[in-house]
Length: 288
Image (cartoon, rainbow, N blue to C red; front, side, top):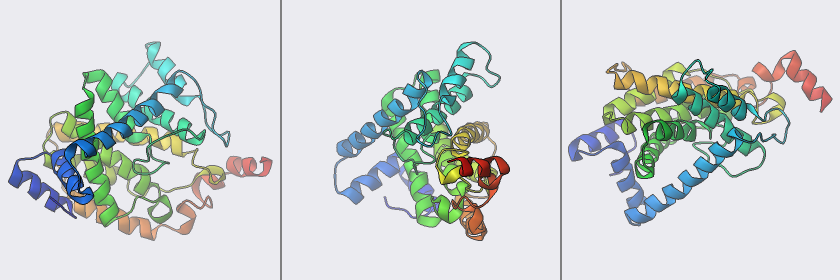
């Protein structure tokens, strides 16, 4: 059940009548030479950490070590609870939970890098929002996480997930692609539709730079986790509605990697360009 390309993964799904999550489980069992129960138990542990990190800051603001963020998740939750949300419960929850994880991360709490610490809010944000809104049991969410891990694995094999290598498109972009694919499978989509959703996300976030203010993974990282969560849900919605993606996931990953390699060093996590060099950000640097 091993695969290196999305096309190979889809062929395995088709020939064995399996979902992406099922193929990924079998691959993990083979790689780690263990049974499915052990593999699932590890993912369950990760999911519990994800849920905890997404929940606490929605009721209690957590100030970051760098002082740039803290309290945003609670503000969004309060806004929704007051009946004022413009975007509906699913998207509001997804972005609030995604921002919450960044508050936990930047205050030295426990998170699951998915695929990185700076993009760790997207996947749990989307999964938890869907679970609550559609009453999805944990075992199906676990399947969604295996689906997401397959997309992350493909990105690591064929492109990059590092902002220092490929910009924020490689971190938030891949995290959102993982979440979009997982959401698509959870809501009844086919393996091909999952890859359509993942490809659409990367296309939509192509060229996104990595420009952390003060060199800290706080701002604009937290805002971009929210954007990635919303992007994931948009792509999943499009795919489930039957909108196909002209460019296959394998080609889109290659495209993203090539774009990333061509980004100037100032836009790859060096804090020497973008938001990090605006007058306000520079003033913050001088005040620290």
